[in-house]
Length: 306
Image (cartoon, rainbow, N blue to C red; front, side, top):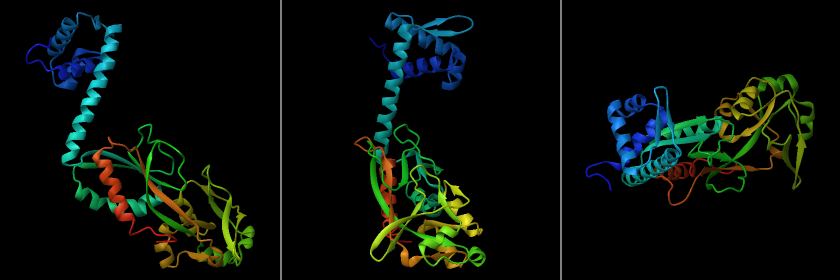
């Protein structure tokens, strides 16, 4: 029987801290308890269970088999308690750390400008933003929400469509003055074309002529895993790039980049989604963030578009 007034959850927390820290004093510092208070708590647990959980020597604390079993249960119960408290707290006002992953260029130009309004709406949510052109593993807990482009593989994740962007072939006036302007897609064989090096990327660009779509193999001096990098290389006159329209507005308005071969543009678009672990237990902070992205991108990312 539980001694009246004794906090069972606190006992589990103390035992887990001792097992993690490896000493009573370190566990006490972590929980703001004295080493003697920690020791008394462990004595009470062992007395109630009628089993020794720890072997104590002057040099180390070692879990007994019973202690290992109790530790696994303690950690599971504490995690479930934290999840339950967070879920209940989220019903009132979404809060907590929200880990968001996105591509560098799109994140910088399109996602970051949306965050100011979101944090004003939900001041108790901490956005933990990671911009990288590498793939994060949501199922493994590396992110709560990821913005992903292109076709999504089959998985247990939930995806909500946010929008789509077209692409344009561009080059700088300086490059064109030096190398000439391609008039047909086939002219690209004589130019320096800049491409992505993603595993899913093909060394071809799509075109459209007389009602027929076809792809043309391109090559050049640089491949990169970042649209930002390809855009900067094009601005620097290194070569010709085919990049998302969302990144081109400023450079084309100011004349630093020139669109090429628009008559042959197939009008293809790349869809992008918010991807997350769905289900009944999805935290409120994830739900409201995804809803916010759907709301904002629905007016700003259109086919062929902005």
